[in-house]
Structure formats: structure tokens, C-alpha cells
Image 1 (cartoon, rainbow, N blue to C red):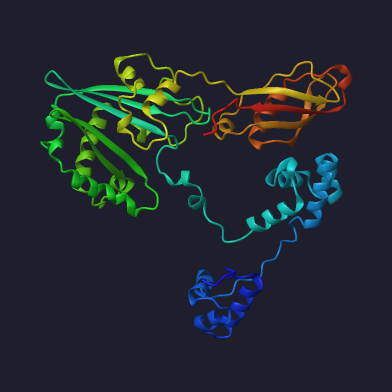
Image 2: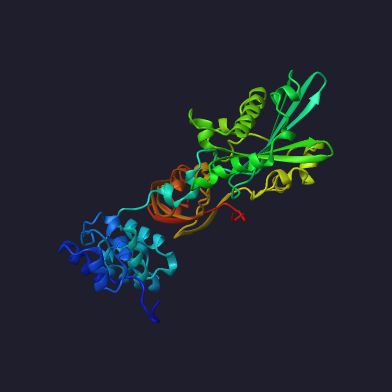
Length: 422
């Protein structure tokens, strides 16, 4: 490596490389001309298939750097959005989106222009490539499933405890319990296989399968069995293809684990995978404050935490979090000008906005009629998901007689009251 050698290629150098490639020069010839290995030149040409990219140009409808400078000066001087938009001969919504996308009150024209130029680059990566949470097929919330299997008389008693972690105060943590009995003995459920005799080497070999996948999507299974005087934990990783692909080629011991789980699920009824993928606040079942029982006391003391290594929330943490109160979201009146309402009923927090974690101020205008009621609801600024609820609520607002025939600007605040930033 040469001292002081600069890595990468400048924009003029890249244009020169494309010109040389178009003229018929080889990768090695171009590399020698720029004192670069031919592999570096190949990395530039390969993503485009050897076809020079078209020169990038802005749309005539896009905001220019000069217009962004005017927006920045307007914010610094405290000018209203409508006044800034009129000066630019643009819609107020265009200016509002521009400011909210690029820093809000800390808006800077040069930074915003660079961000807009970068966001306009095509092709874009799809959402599945940039958002890991979207790459999972199952329920979008973190959950743990605990199955307790014990001999009971001539059969077997089963208890399933599903612990769902809370999500940013939009969905509270909850615990769901289901119980059932089976006529088969524990040995019959195991199908004649003694889990204590399964070689650890075979289990480790099967666990290596998920290393060949970019993102693991499936279920981590840990089975705790008593082998003489020792407790053994048997781990299996069930991939999503094991569940859905008829030719998955599932290894022997993982397939055996899936067979046991299928029997238990059949006896207990629908589980987590049978629930809706998206649940709005207020729709979730289960108990947010489960009653105390010997099983829950064991969960609280961390007895089953070792069965879930690497999880962000252990069973004991989820159980204890169900005991903590969660503040409900609120909608509060902030201000109105030039008149204050004498009656201002607030709407319920929209469930879809709460599930999306949206909050903030919402500004709108209304015209006051002679009887003090409002008409001509129009949004000035705020999240669109708040509009329907706020518009319906505004029909019940009343203003004093002096406000008749006037237009009033109102600001309310939607607050999740959430301190959980996970």
C-alpha cells in the first residue's frame, strides 16, 4: 500500500472510465491508466452491466436550492408556512412536507438539497432489504411460548403460557394461558424416542443450518428434560421453510421436535401463528394483569429464563412488566387564535396512529357560524391519521358570539405518554 494513496474514484474519473470502456479498452488497460487494480474497475462497471448510466437531472417540479434557501430564511425569521409558500408560488403542503422531511425547525437548505438529491437516486432498495422487521413472516411482536408437559394419572396434562412483550406503549405486555389433557403418556407423545439419548453432536450439526440464511426466520425451540440426576436442554431451530415447504428436507431431530409441537398444539387449540399479523391497540386478547399462580411464581423467579437464550425480553421480565401501569394516550387542547372555544370535546386517540407510534401537534382552521358552531374544517399542519378523528370532534365545538363569521386557528396535541423507546 503506497503512503498517502487516495482510495475511491471521483466523479470525473468515473466519467473517464465509462468513456474508455465505451471506446473498447479492457479492464486491465483502464486500471493501469488510473493506477487501480482491474477488480476496482470491474466493481464500477458490473452493477450497470457495462452500460453507462444516464446523466442525472432534476425534475422541473422539484424544489431548487434557491427555493430551499428562501424556506430556510423564512423559518429563521418566524414567517408562517403559508407566507413562505406564497413567496415561492408553491402549495403550503409542499413547504410543510419539505420542512418535516429535512430537519423541522433545524432545517438547513444545503443539507436538505443533498438529502433530496440522494433520495431521488434510482433504483431504490426495496423495503424488505432496508427494514429487517419486515423480513419476518410471523407476528410483528416479540413473544415467548412456554409449554409445560407433566404426567397426570393415566394421561398427560399440558399447559401453554404465551408471553407477549409490550411494544412502545402501543400494545401492553400480556400473558395468555391455555390448558388441556391428553390420553397418551409422555413416552407416547415422544414417539418412543428417548431425548436423553440424542447425541449432542447431531443437535449441533442441525443448528448450523440457519447459518446459511441471511436472516433467521422461524422458531427457536428449547426442550428441558430430566435425564437421571441432570437437567438437559435440547435446542432445535425450526426454519420457516420447515413449516411451509413440502420438500424442506428437515433433519431427523428437528422433525421429531416439530411432531411433538404439532400434537401439543392440536390439543391446546390455536396458538400464536394462528393470530392476526397486525393487532391494533385494544384488540389484543389475553390478560395484561395475570393472577398469581405457582406457574407464574416460577416464571417471576426466572426459573424458565435459561430456556430462552439471546432474547431481548426474558419470561421473568415480561411477567413483571405486566404489573407496571401504562399511561393511556391523551389529546389536549394547546391554543386557538383569535378566539378560544367555550366547548371543545377531544377525540379518542386513533388506534391506527397509536399502533404506528405517531404523536405531535395538529393544527387546523375552522369557520365559526352565527350559533357558535364550526364549519369548513381544514388542516394546517399535522399527521394525516389524526384528521378524521379531529374533524369529527370539531363538529361539537362551540365558540363565543364574538367569533361569529371569523376563522379560528386551533392547535391540539396528540401524546402517547410513552417512555419506552425500544
